[in-house]
Image (cartoon, rainbow, N blue to C red; front, side, top):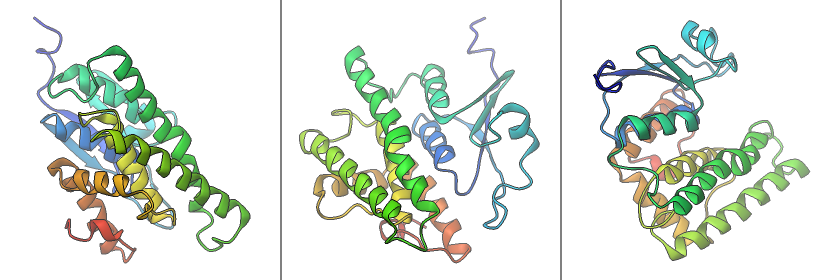
Length: 231
């Protein structure tokens, strides 16, 4: 019996209402048409993910979502989950088939998480003092990154070329958090704005980003303008 056919039909994905990385994994699973059980770990503004879910604590030494469980497989980290989902359900492919194009797409996904997003994280603690030198530097760095992505999108429909994929999912969610943390995408990057609108109209993206927007509204937090019609 093939190893994949012996697996349970559904996997379980642990995420949270305000988890950027969990949202990435959830969008990817929906894009691939996979059936899964979604466990949303409660989040509180004062205490965060406290108490943390026991399965998240058991599986992930970093004590964070997302976590995926499929049979006896237990993995964490959104990029690792991307790779597993691609192997589990190769079609539709969310990585380019050409080896060099795939490497470039993987680099874009990595840069979104590890080069762009740290500037957003820095801003999370500086919302009451956006004129602080560190805040201004983080906003400037995010703005430069937007300009770089805009140049890519001037030449292609999606970040890694003609086809939508993991690189787009990763940066869409990261930039959503940039928007929330005072580093918005502006008309200075029109190709990036048009790309964001295309992605927002995708059913999988709209379902996940819309649920996040609805949760923000339910707790009285601002909702990015481009998401206000999604819930």
